[in-house]
Amino acid sequence: MCLQMQAQNVTVGLSDDAIAAMHAAKIHQDSIDVSSLVVEYDYECRSFPYRKFRKDQERDSRDYMGGYEFTSDEGQVLLKMESYCFMPEVWTNYPDGQTTVRDAVLPSIFETQEERKTINWTLSEDTMTIGGYLCKTASCELHGRQWTVHYCEDIPTSAGPWKLCGLPGLILEASDHSGIHRFILSNVQHIVSPIFMEHNAITSKTSEAKLIKKRIKIFGNKHYPKNPLYHITDLHSMDGVYCDKGKIENGVFVSDTAHVYQPIRCQCDVGTNA
Image (cartoon, rainbow, N blue to C red):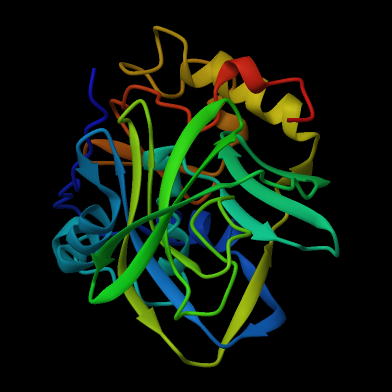
């Protein structure tokens, strides 16, 4: 089954309770570093482009929440839509030599820190052009999936999408061999920009193995697509507000129906150091 997502259109305005709920889960940002390169990717899980979903959300924001602005301080919480694609936030080499991952598995936000993994890349002389950039090809195995990527040595950074990194140039495109996950460059800017590490009161620290197992157990359950909050026995304990076609729970919009779980990290890799 394909993972499919669409913007939700809500015709009612935000109530005072809704605003209060978002304030309660409001994310406080602290800059941990400054980057000189900002890169955006289109992320596709099977057939749905994540960036199009984000643009649809921003375009329809006035209708979506009855005139509420996503660009406001409170609205920034609603832009945390990675959960629609089950895509965690990743900070590479933070803290030094480690990788930090932040992920929402309601009713909690989980954070993990693991030793930074060295990827064993196989380089190829095959080339292709992406967005006007001449790219070389490389492949690897990472967390149970085989990946083929295209990177540009003319952009001198070892960065890439998700946890894919470590090549002598920026990764512009990455696809896993199953055809489920794909990243493709949409924009690159040579600008100075702060790197934020976000903190909130409901973040819990755990190990990456435990987090992945929890995600698979909850998101992979047959009840999840029809009832995304099936596993929460006490919804009253959460900061939740009902709205058309979904809810805002702990600052995260949850649709009444969810999407088929397509983990970017395979189950076979869980519990190992790979």
